[in-house]
Image (cartoon, rainbow, N blue to C red):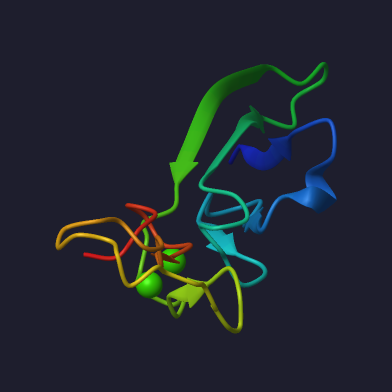
Length: 108
Ligand SMILES: [Ca+2]
Ligand SMILES: [Ca+2]
């Protein structure tokens, strides 16, 4: 009697994974995006098909590794500022910082 496997989750359709019931191979079902979800937790249940069926369950966590797939971006298209000619050298003028959605958050 070979066990049959299934994913146990309150909303399995929200998971980007599916499991082959007979082999137990977990496969991606849709494209992953670490910037949207970096980790998934769910259960997998095995059932032996006996009468009554005997079951086992285990907890699974899948962590999504990051790739550099986002361009850095500025919060504004354009910056414009005024500065007095009397400002001494070293005076701060404006913070023009780019952000990056990939892991680490800011530019390296
Ligand atoms: Ca990036
Ligand atoms: Ca990324």
